[in-house]
Image (cartoon, rainbow, N blue to C red; front, side, top):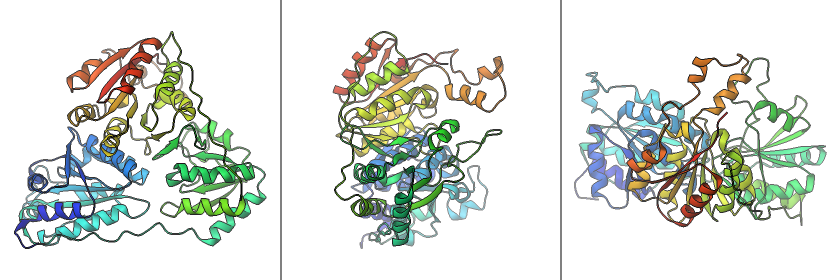
Length: 520
């Protein structure tokens, strides 16, 4: 390209040339030349978030549904720090994101201005690729390299730090897309080891995540399960699971260690697909941190980034020829009346969830029933909180809706965690996204009450309880939603919830339902 342009424009043009179509952003002064470039260049859609955790969580949801990166645009180190929790979740999900962070101009950085910080130090723990641009002339190549790095299997966060002068100085080139490596083939040694483990097992189990949880991967794993009487498990929290009628059922490994230990207690061969041997989320006094039995043989079929789908299908063709995997029949629960609680809400949720819906699940304890009932409802995709840093559910749903505007997105959302990134409702309204948010309004952090007991510190007193309950004052979710442009409803009975949820499943646009249920 011969016409004069800024480094920022060369970067934006290079990103779009490499297939980046959306920029989730909350920019500041140091990013104004990037803002101007996005304004000028066709092909990159800006989506504003009013908090950086919304920006990064939306990029996560978008990547989960498209398999390709959006870019973020964040304001210096403190702006990125506001979004790090959801970048942590995204890194655990192995999704591609191009994370662009503005910085002070190179000549200004030495002056220690108030917003100066160690951006690279902040970014290093969650970034699979990290670079600070040094020149406007090479910024285009940096952008192309970032996209290729983010898309390198299994997917990761490529962070590009852009000093302001690199953005405003003159550049002349647009970089061509770089080649992206394919997933590497699983070795014959690994295939043979898994085949031998399955043949010799008394009680085998297959633990999966990643691409293995697509309908295709589950079908292949299901054939192996039928042939060897193996149970299929997935990680407790996963990037994306394709669930529902016509698909193979996979059992989520329980969150609570005691339950996970019991679940795996008789397993003698554990096959890992794109995951690692299961460990507890936290350490507890006098309780084990690993779940596989001591005498269980653990064999890895595919590591993250390897061709798990090809490996599962090759094994199924070799070891289970002619075997058909058992799939779930459609079994919609009845619509209950009376009290609204986690169980009745879960039944109603599963009954009315439309085919091809996307569920962004941050329901924590109160959402467990809905997850169970939805295994037998219409086919859908289920997104989970992969890194355990709460506050991903609402923005992840927004990003999924940007990625898939033709599909209904439902956020199954705890009330406490919703407040971390409640600004996502505003983005849903501004972008007219087809998202229905169900707030599980129990007025408490129930999981903390459970954990208080499990760590063995006795019964909580008044001060401890004050740190686990979020009433007094009660959150008014209808008013919060209305104030951000989202139509809100409140349901206190099963009949009320069924009526409004069914209506929202048929009507496009952003909606919120405050479902008042009892806490512990």
